[in-house]
Length: 155
Image: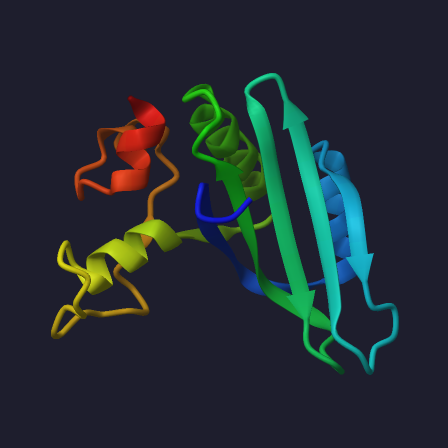
């Protein structure tokens, strides 16, 4: 997936070991599809997927050399998927949130709000805090900020 994907950053309230995250992913039904790096002194990456009849939800987490704990990972799905993929994604994120407290950053919203409709940086934009979203699928579907990728997906 590339430009046709919708991207979220999932941030943990407290960092977590890679083994613990993989365990949680397994509980949620995510299957590991790829791993790069094995040693603590090298960059390590993990890719997981949840295949549903509504589409595929993918995760990507990485650790820098020497890093032992994760503070976030990325989650995405294709905007070419049926709109029901949004419900499945929010169900997955809500289930994870019951295991580990998280915050969700909508990276598409971040790009859109930061650059504005004309593609120019918005002055005074709070990059760190502006794109956190509630774990509310109905509010997400309302698309109050007019995010184009959401419109394409939900139409």
